[in-house]
Image 1 (cartoon, rainbow, N blue to C red):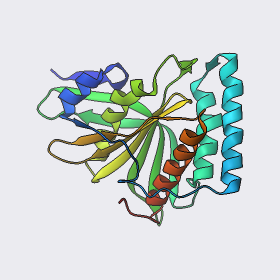
Image 2: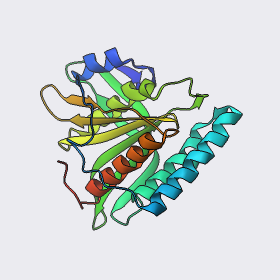
Image 3: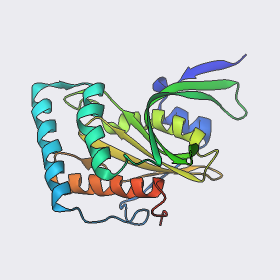
Image 4: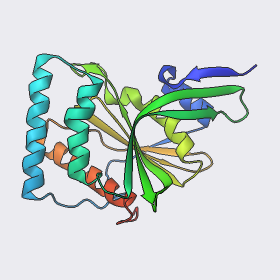
Length: 220
C-alpha cells in the first residue's frame, strides 16, 4: 500500500533517510559563486529594505505574504531576477515525488521558483525558495530545510545541481544541492538581513545566482 507524506511534516532525519542525502558544511560562498561588489545604488536600496524589516519586526508577527512581498521581491528585483529569460513562479504545487525502493509518495508546495527560460521553453529550475511564517523569528530559517530538500530533490533528477533558500525574513539559509550517489547538500553560512556585512553578502549571493540562472555566469 502506498503512503502519501506531506513534506511539511518531515524531519531532517526523515529526509536524509528517504533520499540518502549526505550533508556537507561550507564556510564560504566563494568556492561556488563569484561575488561582486555592490554599487552605491544597490547599497541604498538594501538599506531601505533593512529599515522596512526592522519596522515590521518591531511590531511583532511578520506573515509569509509580507516576507515575500516586502523583502524577497525587492531583494530579487535588486539582484537581477526580473529578466525576460528568468521565469518566476509563486506557490507552485510540486509533482508527486516517489521515493526509490519505498511505497511512499511526497507532496507539497514551493513558495517561489526561479526558472531558466530559453525561447519560451523552461530548461531547468536552478533556484527554489521556501518561506517560513514566523513570529519574532521564533522559527529558525533552518527549520525549513527538510521541506526544501524534499522539493529540490526532484530538481536534481533533471540537472546536476540546484540552489535553495529557506528564510523567515530575517535569516537566510542557502543550500547547494548536487546530484550524486549519494546526493549531497552543502549548507552555506546563514545570513542575517539586519546586520550590515551579512546583508551585503546576502544581496551579493542573490546577484550571483541570478547571473547563473540567466546564463551570464557558470558555477565556479
